[in-house]
Length: 211
Image 1 (cartoon, rainbow, N blue to C red):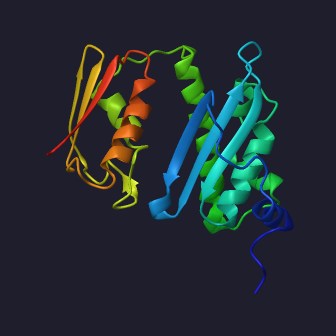
Image 2: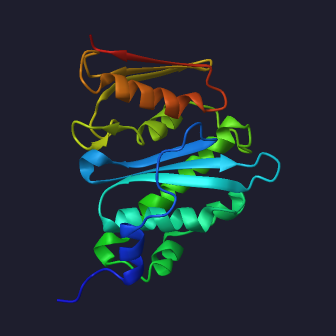
């Protein structure tokens, strides 16, 4: 049987570049879930005058392809402007790694989405979003699809953990079908708050539990 990974993938897996959590990042993104096998977090430091990504790092939980693609994505993005980095594709990442097994292509997609999520986080925090879509229930739902339910390894929308969403003049309330004493309650609340607070017209976020 032919070995499925290229030498480039193995090199980035064994010696990943730009790895580790960044303190006080200007932007950060998280995609995937450790519970379902693959997760990537991307952190950025951005020059506010040139909008060049001066530093970037990642944390990864998953297979060799996951780690290698996150590593190569940070290499490709470092030194680029935010607009240039947005144009990096999963195909570019896979090609830079000498190809990936077909069943592992999603790993490169996950890394690219992590990068784009971190860029979006920076842009939202710095008022750079040109098309300011008013926050309504559908916008909140889209954001909550990026909040994982560690109990089941899928997002909190698909696992029906969200009982109610209410949006009223910039105040967002999310009710979860989970007791406040649950071991994951605090982490999920923090993730929800982080995902929603950066929306341009949101003034407050409240997360309530069933008890």
